[in-house]
Image 1: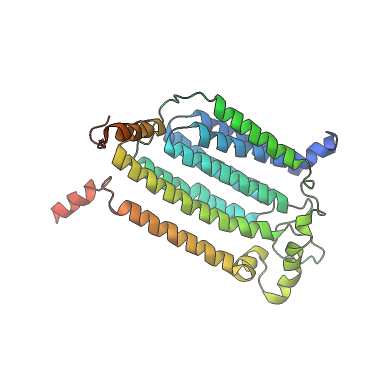
Image 2: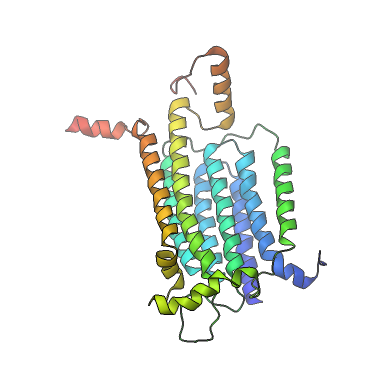
Length: 187
Length: 137
């Protein structure tokens, strides 16, 4: 029961943060709240036993994403303009999608039950074979590096492609270049 | 469909809260015109999807998938954790790409509001003239 209470408390904070992100128009505040949201979700991941995911989310979601957003904000306007369109249609779309998803959860196995189909096949097999194959206590790290190494290779390819694309996009950008010209003049 | 008993709600509340968060992110993406706000909404949506996957891997009474000395220990399913670790990193890569595109859009058109960008596009279609960043407020 105490797990459920911690869970619900973390979710309340997450929902409050998310609603504040919807309401606020100052993009600096929104960036900071996104960082808070990532940190709270990292806390939630710890209660759900996903410690590796938690510290990746804390480092990448709360850290690097925030730095990227702040970097963008230094080159773009800091305030969102007031909405000109009616929020009714988006509301309708969101409620219908949400209702469909909640209807989908009715058939799902109960949260945290050990009999769920997800715990019957590949997962337990990895846990069973793991001690014979790899001499490392953290199962997630071992699976990531060995059994599912090709996933990680694919991930690296995606990050590389995104990096190249960002370089190509910003290569000819002149925003934020003034300082470098000043430095060249000094030389 | 089962009745809405207390047990039924306890077994599903986690999914429902995650879906509420997901729809909040979705609402930001579809209703806000500011491109940076859209990226933030996409991030909210993405993190909620991660929570849904991690919830599926949880076993109540289990522990984090790190071997302990107790041979009867129950471990939560490590496979969703591995998949979501990959997804988090890919998510940051797409965020970075989106933000780089926003910087280029701001530079070329002088605005990152969807309404103004649509107006510029409309003007270009009717008059054939491309406004410069300097000429706009």
